[in-house]
Length: 397
Ligand SMILES: [Mg+2]
Image: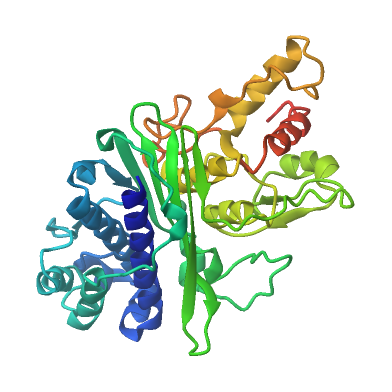
């Protein structure tokens, strides 16, 4: 497992590097922000250069994992299909080729002859990334059956922030409401037999700007497998300072007013907002907030698998909000009081799972792998209980 984790960390860095190159090389950046209209759009394979960036990162991760761990090749999943079709019905499959030159030739076709952009991308895809050794991995000796593993990838979460790219906003309490810092790469490993999230790498490609005016990224990882709970986070004091009452939560600006109202009694005004689901989960992992709550089914398995494993390794987790509320209400109804004595309340059934679509999920196209019922990402069981108690007072949730 340590070898797989090392590889995924290095791959997340390689993906972050590609994400930074697309923004820093003019030939690529112009394509990213270009709006194609009318005929120009129709003759191309590509409706959207951003989609190519996503597909390329996803295929690069799949390719590199398969090289090192052949048994995982068929179990790497993501949002994007790697086949592009133009209006003439011609299809082309984007996959990393044996050599840089071959990848470049293939990308030139997809990019309608733009050899300059293709060669920049091909070079980044075939680059070797060497990571400094991580001593925290030395003691990690979890043996897992590789045949039972699956991997969910989100190549770039927070696309709108990635393309808009504003980064000059002033953070409130360390949280950036928008901009490049909200763009996140997510690689999560799960058990295909029982759906548990096991291991995750969350990479923030745009963390700080160095003295050479270049973006530098960062990553965090975590493993939650049986008795093994390890992560790369610095040990920080829990931010439950008794002098500041209430828990802090992060939401999407577009969250339901009912949720915002319901959270008032437990947050004492500590409600934050930011773009990007991956980024909001990272804020929870980074101790900037206690929980991330989303009432809509607008996240997907590829968004949550990696941060879920990291939160589990910190003694937290990620629950299906609707399911957790159902279990909580049932528990209270059975005469177990108001839920404040939570002994006997078992919320494990509500934890998100990754091996199959949610049973109550939408049948709409593109929604198959949505986390139906919304989510609560939390760093401690106590926080989850407080959230459920207050939200359970609202019958429409
Ligand atoms: Mg996403």
